[in-house]
Amino acid sequence: MSPARRFFRDPRVYQITALTGLLLYGVRALDFEIGPAQAAVTLLTVLAAQWLCTLAFGGGKVSFEPRSALISGLSLCLLLRTNSLWLAAAAPAAAVASKFLVRWKGKHLFNPTNFALVLLLLCADGCAWVSPGQWGSVAFFAFAMVCAGGLVVTRAGRADVALAFLACYLGLLFARSAYLNEPVEIPVHRLQSGTLLLFSFFMISDPHTTPDSRAGRLLFAVLVACGGWYVQFRLFRTNGLLWSLAAFSLLVPLIDWLLPGDRYRWLRASPVFSTRSEPVPQLHETHPVYAAGLPPGTEH
Image (cartoon, rainbow, N blue to C red):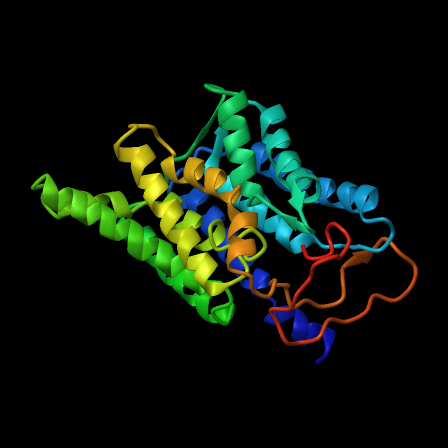
């Protein structure tokens, strides 16, 4: 397969396009509270951090890979709100650093965007917050269709965890409303959240932080959905899904041990830049493949 064809078959290209379109539409038409300066700082920092971490931790064996970093940066642009450009830079730096530093057996534990958001919520309370992402029904359903199309592009590589999470979380929301005799419009309104879509299709479905086996991913999805519901409706804290994902990500090594499976690895083209002089070998087209023992950053 030619490098160009391999590049466009990479599902991250679709994800970057979708997130970029959503960000541009949100800024121009929906008055997202993010200025050009914050967006530029976030995206430039995430790319710079990926480059520096590749140099520092790659051991000369890892190529610079901007696609996964851009997904994290665009997701932070859509979700993170702060009046400080320093915090806008700290978030993407923390997101990328977590991939290289917080690892278990060659696999990073936390979704980078989730890690950065939770870290800022803990350490910069009041100075950084997460946008609720209420976009209105038209924008919401349009983006929902884009996310659904993403499942086709990824060839269902991690569609199971996203769909299992949504089924469980939606079931919990409607069951609670039925128990409280709430009108159906209330749970439907709660579902019209851009944050929920971004979480479902770009965070919990991250193939490098979810369990390796299908059974493990289904268990993980149910745990995160139940945990998020409990934090939101029993502890009455905002951002329940973010807290739940961060907490249950710590159980992924245990789930992988109990329910082992093949580790996912992106199908990718030749890198944009390389930190080594020798040619970069092409990956086999079949995936997922087991990637244990690879240097930090190889699988990003």
